[in-house]
Amino acid sequence: MTMDMKKINIGAFVIAGAMLMTASGCTDSDFDSKYEDPSKVNQVTISNLMVGVFQKVKDYDIYEYGRFFGFDSQFVGKYAQTFGYSYSGGMYSPGYAPAIDGQWDNLYSALMQYRKMESLYNEENDTQKAQDEAFMLAAKVQLYDFFAATVDIFGDMPFFKACTLPLTNDVNGSYAPYDKAEDIYKTILDELKDIAPRFRSATVPKNFSTQDFINLGDMEKWERYANSLRLRLAMRVATQGALQAEGRAVIKEILENPADYPLVEEQGNNIFIVNQKSGQLNFTAGHGLGDWVTNRLASGAIIDRMLGHGNYDMTSSDPLSGVYVKGEDDPRILLNYNPVSITNRETGQMDEHRYLGTDLTVADELTEYYSAQAQDEVNTANKGFSQITQRGFFWENDKFDMLIMASPEIHFLKAEAYAMGYGVAQDMAKAEEEFKTAVSQSIALYYYYDSIGSGENCRRYDAPTDEEIADFANAKWNSTAYVDKLDAIITQKWLHFGFLVSREAWSDIHRTGYPSGLVFPEVSGTIPNVPNRWRYPSTEVNYNPYYKDVAGTDTYTEKLFWAK
Image (cartoon, rainbow, N blue to C red; front, top):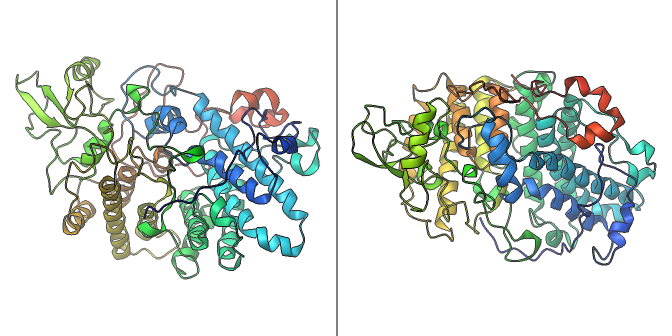
């Protein structure tokens, strides 16, 4: 799956971060001058601008500092309980708010560059357009992925008229009104339908493979990415809300016509960015987790659902509390977290090889005891709760690809569609098949990256056999621990995402209410409950004159149109 990557000629094609952005993403900054600066780029071209779009979006594609220092571990990962954190009055306030607002800024920087692409493309003749079509299509797919994900956080956003400055040179007109989230979603769903098949017929430009640092010029993968993104977004809106009928129609269209709508269904189809050893694509998975201990604590809710005997609790009479039982429990836990040893205050005995995640329901006094007494069995310098394993299958593994979309998610989506009858006829046999495929592919993917990992803690455990994986997936489908089959599907999807894709896990919780049994205590802080959305950045409030149109709904409690 991992391949040697050709060096990408990216120079510094992205617009400088210092470019002032308004809420609508445009100001009177001279766009072209940023590209004419010899220290920045050599030439403003459509291919270079595509890379500029990719560069701005990649901050939330890759498992890097911005995500793990602030966005995932201190924001969506807290709300999805894919990261561990302890009870406090301010626990629903993110630890680093600029990481959230930064997504807004990066999105409009990417959109600005796409608008410039459109401007140049519209000036070309038909022959030139045929040569540049692939750049336009790829940039739009990646931009729409990022735009939908940002809508899922903020709700209504400037979209249709945003970033028109490169096209019109009208500074006053570049301030854009807010468009309804459902209108943005519908447009993206419609356009992805048009975009995906065009990758089959589009000319492959000579420099596409060297500029495309996502799929390396592979047009089939771009088509699968576009279709899979459309399926993800269709499922988001198919459960309830204004686009329920549209979402279900899209699901029906895609699942009943697989030849026309190929998806990311195998590991070889996965969409990802490969780590390079130098330059702007030199990164190592999980960078940023090491800045705060609270960035890397195990979630007790996750562990509770990975182990048959649950998260470690020394007040329990169960001698296997927190113990991994081979052949019964989730083998991904071995790669995710380090076990701990702790003196059991109730028995006086040393409890070894226990998985201990943070628990929002236990008394502060017990939390303090765990924090002070538990000893990491792998990284002996660590005290307290189990932590994400360093130098293992993920964190500090420079062989870990920066996954944008992986095949297990697609099979979970298909399982949900068949189980619930969303667009297609309800078919529990197909739902079961897709569920088992999803779980099996997830485990195989985790152990694949463990097998090629560069860290000293890789390959500490033997990968489960195909038979063992199949038995585990079968047991989860038939488990009575779930409220219903949708609970089983979403819970296993949530475990697959884990701390890798917290944003999608958070959206699923808002959309379905599953996994069942998650507890979110009310607190006395500024944000007393888990937010339904995040408030607009201060730059929006202060500079966009159209903010007045959305000020009344700019609250933490306002629900997204697709949310339960």
